[in-house]
Length: 87
Image (cartoon, rainbow, N blue to C red; front, side):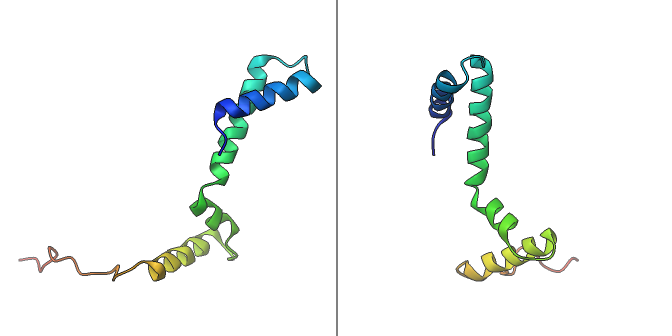
């Protein structure tokens, strides 16, 4: 994934060719926005929630949690040995 500096260099180079009247500060702001957008797009859990085909987001999250539970090794619902009867 490109770094913020890489985005800044690319935006500044594009600015010099096509939009020389845009300030350096504006170009850096655009680069930061692009970098943040790229960071959000690589978050796999968020991508799975947004692209999951369910009628509601709540149902999508439930289904994703079920999928995670099915793929995890061992029993996720192990009984806690510290949970005993209250005296």
